[in-house]
Image 1 (cartoon, one colour):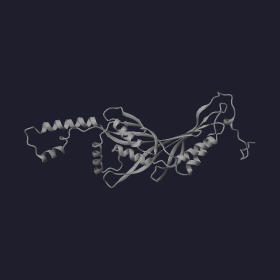
Image 2 (cartoon, rainbow, N blue to C red):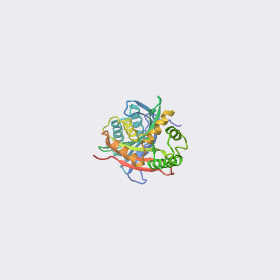
Image 3 (spheres, rainbow, N blue to C red):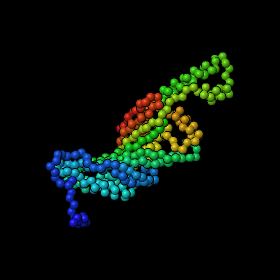
Image 4 (tube, rainbow, N blue to C red):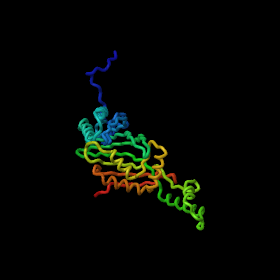
Length: 308
């Protein structure tokens, strides 16, 4: 007769047994892509809940041990992320629990948490607003007393090429000279009407959607003001992508692009200056990519914190 498992019956734990297979230590062992809920305060006091993909890992320092206790990691993550909004200190405590649950097996712990955070953004001119989703990746490690956390996000913006703008202005000048000869009297209304036609503006500079990927190490162990950092970056660039757009908003966006001509080097330096002056950021690295409309490859620039 088959006997079902009872609550008191000992079940075999093959992973914890010594084995005769290949012996050695491992850098990281765990689970990746776990589906978990996460509550996140981006620094504006508005706690939002969403779905996240989580990776939980420890190293394996005992050569003869066959594996780790993955179910322990899963349950620890599930309990911690269900308890309340993420904080830097809370993530550190979670990693400490990883190690205490694997005493004798592990001395390094790591967690990665990836999700999108929605923020409502006002239109430039009209009385409207819409949603922007900022991708967030949290990557934290703990080794003894050495705790490191990095938060990565993307800021998407428009970049208009300064060289293309100069070349376009030259063509407009040439076209003006051909249309209105030197000996022709200039009439203001005639010129204004001409400038409002496609014949007047014969060339426009190329612009493209661009992405700044920013990885920061925050100061302190509370709630990191991510929205404040994003606002700072978008203000420095001047041309963040928009949500709800009426014609007045589109015109204001065109004006912002014309007043913020930038190569990828310019964008990287603007962001570098803005973040280097932020006392809540211990360190950062950024990658700027202009997804060029002129050619099929990107123009990119990298920068890091300027040490004062």
